[in-house]
Length: 77
Image: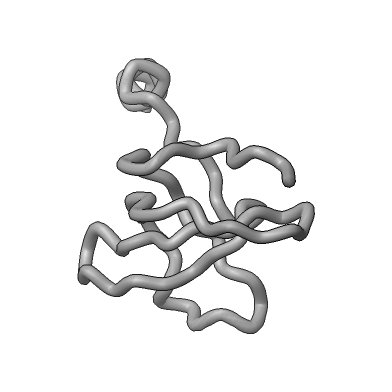
């Protein structure tokens, strides 16, 4: 079984697929690493804004940019 790339407690961006509700995108925190035999691992996550929990595939998650990386972009604007 492949290992998960993200850890419990990690804050990530959820990128919904075309069949997911439009309002579901945003920042989520990993609650559990779910066991599965598929190549696309699954996680139980909680929306940081409204507390809604859902199960998502790893392909739907992206790492959040670090604040140090975003600061130079804000200074240029």
